[in-house]
Amino acid sequence: VTLGGPDVVDGRLLAAIRILLGNDKDVVEKHNLSTLQLLSTKAPLGLSNEIFTLRTLIALCVIALGHFPTKIMEDESLLKGTISSSMKLAIQFRLRKKTLISDVMRELTRKVNTLSNEKGANSA
Image (tube, rainbow, N blue to C red; front, side, top):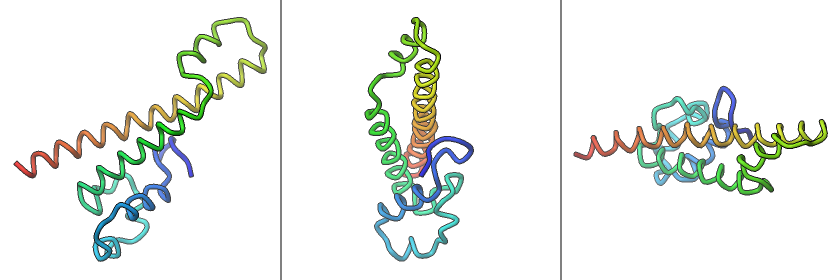
């Protein structure tokens, strides 16, 4: 399962969370797996399900970031100091992974905000 890249979120993870959070088996079964794996698909199981799904993915990103021994700013600070080339490479790799996860969170948060605005407009 991957985060980041052209698909932002691995389709298998996205489909699994959508299905797990789906509260209507019949609605879930009306969609094929390919549709449920696409983030570009417009809320296939409804706006509420999509918002909960995206928030769950954001929470998973927060958990992933929490497993790193340092914060992004700490890594950036370490890179400014005098360190070996192998340590520099390791820190750059770790920093890139954290940046990628942060970018995914930002994109998912943007989608949640857009969907929340749509949901608010639809209920008004």
